[in-house]
View (cartoon, helix red, strand yellow):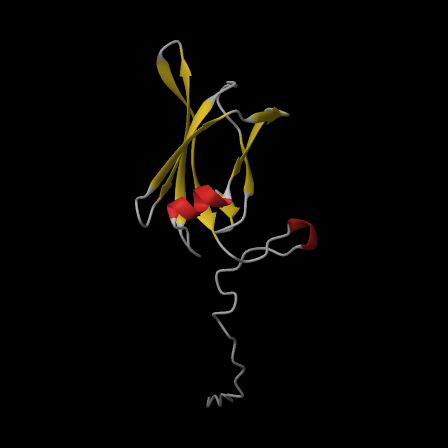
Length: 124
């Protein structure tokens, strides 16, 4: 699963089953069941396919914090559709930078830890 932001362009990396010059991306918002279909030419580097999902596509999906997006990538090969990738994206507005060890947290800005001075007395 990859993590994306709700508004800005996001570069996604996939490991496809085969390489094709033109593929069709289908993005489906799991919460709203809205879909966006886009045909494009991905870039292949080191057996990975990269593609940019644009802010306009995200706006069409009406993405919000905490939603999931299903991704299907297919290619037309000799009149037959071939599934190259099926996966899921997670949408968050948290800043994520693995270089600085800044990772996603479910509890960020929600959970607060409270310290207690409870003393326990044990009688034997």
